[in-house]
Amino acid sequence: MQFKFELEGGNFSKAGYASSQIKKVLKQLSIDSHIIKRVVVALYEAEVNVVAHAWRGIVQAEIDADKISLILQDEGPGIPDIDQAMQEGFSTASPAVREMGFGAGMGLPNMKKNVDELKIESKVDEGTTVRMTTYFSVKGE
Ligand SMILES: Nc1ncnc2c1ncn2[C@@H]1O[C@H](COP(=O)(O)OP(=O)(O)OP(=O)(O)O)[C@@H](O)[C@H]1O
Ligand SMILES: [Mg+2]
Image (tube, rainbow, N blue to C red; front, side):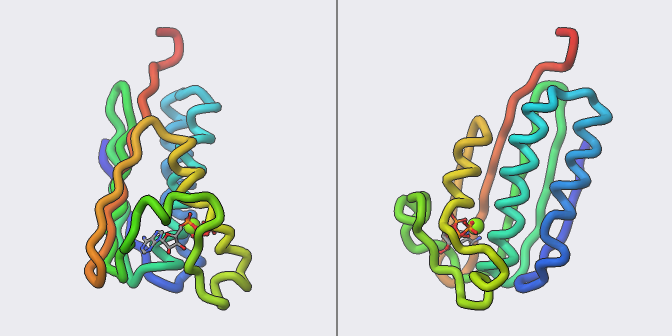
């Protein structure tokens, strides 16, 4: 199963749509609710990052029998130092984004904690690609 969603920089009303849709699909597939929560948290944080830090992006989700793969590809400023960005508390969020309650510098560390694999590729002034994979077993197996 494949899904695709679009994100616009600055449009916080659209952040969270992909994660809520994916949540519904995983529930229908009877995936373990603990795993669903972790995937949804990670995807939500990744969606917000595109909206908060980039200009536009797409979310692609692929659900297979044993895993879910999520790819968020954006056009944006990129991340100059990924190791630094991964540290808890590091944030370059604008005052406007902070006023909306984001910018604690916890999104990337939370994504890392909640998925099995996280890969980030980024080019300054071009954009960022985040890949996350979570493995699961279908209930009863
Ligand atoms: N898609 C992205 N494009 C450009 N920069 C990004 C992107 N995602 C993350 N970053 C950079 O990495 C930093 C850390 O991201 P992280 O999600 O951990 O924190 P935050 O978004 O600033 O705050 P929080 O997620 O806690 O609301 C960001 O402040 C930003 O500098
Ligand atoms: Mg964030």
